[in-house]
Amino acid sequence: MHNICKTLIIMFLLIIAFAGSSSAANITKIDNLINNMEQFDGKVVNIEGEAIGEAMNRGRYSWINVNDGTNAIGIWLESSDAAKITSFGDYKHIGDTVRISGVFSKNSLKHSGEVEIACSSLTIVQKGHFEKEQLTHIKIFSATLLFCLALMFSYIYARAIQKNKSNN
Image (cartoon, rainbow, N blue to C red; front, side, top):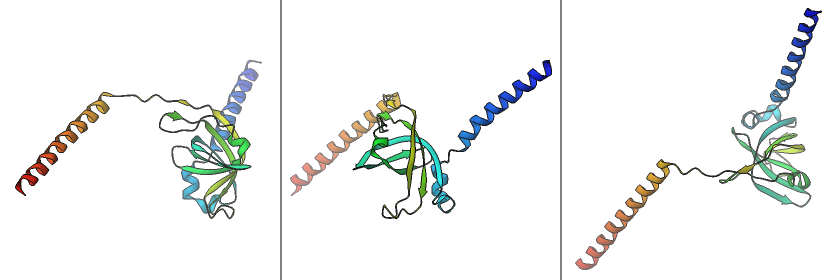
């Protein structure tokens, strides 16, 4: 009886481990798509990354951009799916993390030869948020130094112009 329990526990843990790794292994890095376009062209791919920029609505459909840290790619999706994204990444925001499943095209005939993924499903994995910029000492020092250099060069330039006018 004790050995059966051990075996069942080990089997359960292995099933959980493989289930978790199979979904992670199913995600393709965008850089891999870009570098191996021939291999993925016309095939269903799954990517996961941060929604960046903004949704560019084109009526019933929209464009969004997704960056997974290796590269970014345009996604063509229904505007109703794009509306599910509440936060897009920019300098002050971390965008929603989205999981996209769709057909990869290295040369979309619909969109003037663009590289794209035509989305068939979008899942919000994690909501985005405001990212407060950290003002470090090195940034303050660099800004102060650059400001002082700008003042110094402005003064030298003004003196050179004044001297040039007095010589004429």
